[in-house]
Length: 319
Ligand SMILES: Nc1ncnc2c1ncn2[C@@H]1O[C@H](COP(=O)(O)OP(=O)(O)OP(=O)(O)O)[C@@H](O)[C@H]1O
Image (cartoon, rainbow, N blue to C red; front, side):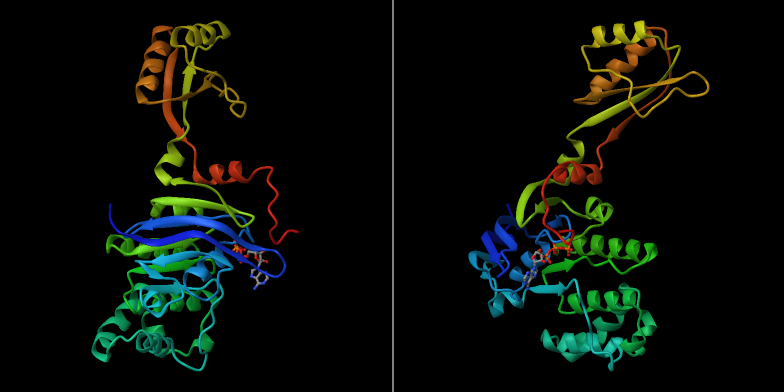
């Protein structure tokens, strides 16, 4: 196993009002993309701020590639896009990125090569010559991404990197995240955009009310229930009974699927693997039903998230 890039061990921040982040223990391997999910106010940003050394933990420990969080060597390893960003509005975008390059110790020649390419990568391009005060919120967020990446850090913490972007901008950021991952960077992504998390992250943790509620590999979360649907013609209750008995599988009619105009009916079953689906296909045909369509409907991350927090008290901004 490769070296853990991000380690949190019982990390806790309790603000004066009792809120914050409690007893978070996670390890993110180098080169992994890790998604941090949770309702508003769950404690995601607080956790990231502790990891990047902006908020002092109340208790617990953390390291970045073995360096204690908050230390200068750990800060040298990270790029960080905060959730709320503001850049010097009297400078041009390019000047802001160059300033961050200097702060990260990037030498001038490297900055000359890197900055124009980065501005291009984040979708600012020649508008880098405009002053930040003329930038839209989305442009400022792109600028923040360039600042986070200009030091070429091995670990990047991105707190909702596309919250201000339009759909095209979000797609561009998703591609950028994929490129970062391909370059072997460790990406820690706080996001409400579950599609991005699903597309980019290897593992996820779900935080609620300051604690980690669940965590796992994205692929496992999405595979937990493999629900198949079959569209059949010539359906009867007797045929359904026979199918259930022959297959021993929980075949049923989904509550949201009425019969089609052509009289076809949707059947549904939670299956363990594709062999079971093939077996069911064969039985449907053997029973003399017409099979129009069959396919899996894997659970999306969105419904996983909704199920995980359903009925829970989350003390977020709604309180
Ligand atoms: N400096 C602070 N002082 C007191 N309470 C705070 C402070 N910062 C955050 N909180 C509270 O701690 C909780 C966690 O906030 P945090 O910003 O970490 O949540 P989040 O999961 O990032 O939310 P969002 O998804 O809305 O960005 C919230 O209830 C918030 O109001």
